[in-house]
Amino acid sequence: MTVRIGVLALQGDVREHRHALEAAGAATATVRTEADLAAVDGIVIPGGESTTMSRLLGVFDLFDPLRDALAAGLPAYGSCAGMILLASEVLDTRPDARCLGAIDMTVRRNAFGRQVDSFETDLAVTGVDGDPVRAVFIRAPWVERVGEGVEVLARVPAEAGATAGTVVAVQQGVTMATSFHPEVTGDLRIHRRFVDMVRRR
Ligand code: GLN
Image 1 (cartoon, rainbow, N blue to C red):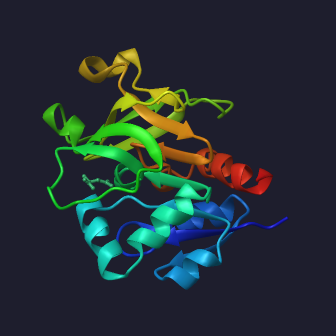
Image 2 (image 1 turned 135 degrees about the vertical axis):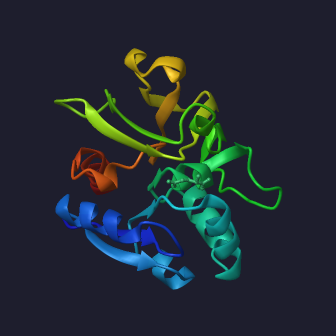
């Protein structure tokens, strides 16, 4: 069965996610309107700038429909800025930035910036078999608190030094989020994990 996955296309690295999803066996579509949203089996919120995406969700009259669709069980995956938007609480953001509350977690924006802006490391991710995942972090958030229903999928490994142990991938129900950008590495396993989850649904 072919699943149709939308990529929120207001801002950010939309094309990279579409390529990865298609390579992982899904049909894809861009989502900019409520009608687009109604036509997809799952949605990806890409990396980019979360405060800009938050503002554009309002401008495009998509904030409430998207929040309601997520609350009603639309599967979602957010990377980096997408993780920030899926959170229930965001630290170090603009006072007018809103988040969608699809995962019961507190994330801190640009959190690694205090150590180093951008970096790469290898991670073990729950549900991803084989070699570790090469994780690319670009002005990334980290997860400071997770609620009871949230599964931690990955933490920064000990070799990474000061930030070791930091939570960087989570899942709650059919909603996944990563601080890093699997769409830029050519490793399809995170996208495949999401596509499989949407397909099983
Ligand atoms: N720092 C960005 C934000 O706050 C996220 C960066 C990214 O998505 N690569 O939204």
